[in-house]
Every structure is written in structure tokens, then in C-alpha cells.
Length: 121
Image (cartoon, rainbow, N blue to C red; front, side, top):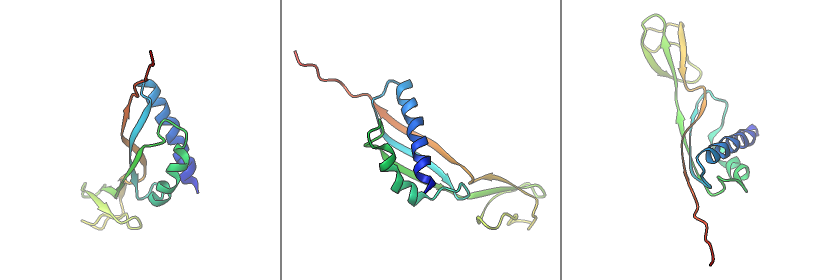
């Protein structure tokens, strides 16, 4: 399951972002996962708790937004949502399309906080 290695890379990125912003906890992680990204959202959800264990994101909530595949037609110039296995233009049936979305996984949003330390006097 390569989703575990994807999650581990995500944890590294989140750790760097937390350090940069002097945060001690990541509380929310929102990902955009394209239908052609090669990432299975359900497997990603299963791998996430294992990958974040012991990290700054250990208690974070994972939210995944699935993105459809979109193409732009080079003939009629319209951008459309298409099925993952049908990249032709739904308007003019041209095969001259360019993939414009749905092939990536992106960290779209995250929330973090800084824990206050309790000092005993």
C-alpha cells in the first residue's frame, strides 16, 4: 500500500510547516485527491493514523475532498468534467483534449495550534 508512504511524506511536510510557524500541534489536515492521482482515498484514511503516530499531527482530523477529472478541448476551447476513462470532449467529441485537473494530491488546508506550557512555581 503506497498510501502509507504518501502519508509519511505528508507528515514530514506537516512537521516542517509546524516548525516554521512555531506550532506544536496540527489539528486538521485537508487534502484534495484527484481521481487520476493514483491515490485511493479509503486506503489513505486507513494509513493516516499509522503515519501520524508520535508526530505533531497525531491527533489531527483528516479530511479528503475528491476531485473529478477535467479537460480542456483544443478544438472548441471548453473545459469540462469527464469520466476517468473517457478524456474526449463531451461538447464536440474531440479527442484533442488537455488534462487540466484531477491528477494530483494537494495539501489544501491545515490547522495548527501552539500548546501552552504549564509552569509550576
